[in-house]
Amino acid sequence: MKARLALLALSCMSPMTAPAVEPITVAWRNKAPYHYMENGVEHGFLLERAKGLFAAAGVPAVFIEQPSKRIWHSFEQGKQAYCSIGWYRLPERERLAQFSLAFHVDPPHLLLVGSAALATIRSHASFAALLADNSLTLGVVDGVSYGPALDRLIQHSTNRIERATVEPASMMRMVAANRVAYMLADQADWQYQRSRQHDWAGIAEYHFNDMPPGLERFIVCSKDVSADAMARLNQAITELAMPAYSP
Image: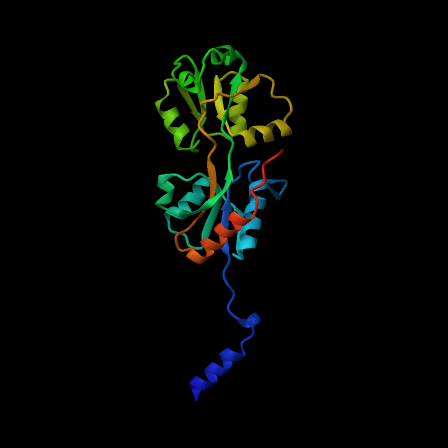
């Protein structure tokens, strides 16, 4: 009798009374113009794309801003129902989380060069030759990856390396002040900074043909996120056109 009553109660349960699916927490770091906060309002072309992908996939999500170190500490600690957006795929990260298909592809990095070093940099026929010049100082934003290929090239460069734990815009100001000879810059980041601050006197933009190709960016999720949710995200990535960034 009790069993029949229990079955009857389940059969009468409306969709509105069914247990709700807990949303996934999707963390994003402050990195303009991809995803950032300005005057208390969320902005960023990749943030908007990611929100659209989760909605199209039917995967409930709550988006929050968190620092990079906290995001990866959460993955290291095995935080569940947790994703983050806009990351390069690196072996050390694959041990901690699962990756979607690529949902954005960067153009190649460019060089931002200080006026004092421009003639020297122009004298080199290739980026490889530039990295072998021990008279130049390369400014590197510490604690971030430029992608596996560039990270390796920087590691083996005979340039003097000036590492600083700063935002890219601060490193750009170091270039403009000739405190470092040059830096590697994400093209979208540079376009954004130029659109926000028109006076970048002292900085020249420079390109080399042998610069490694731009990298793919991914949605990264904790390993407990279901295969079904990941498959639906990947389907949404495949079906929705990947927009280009314009400042």
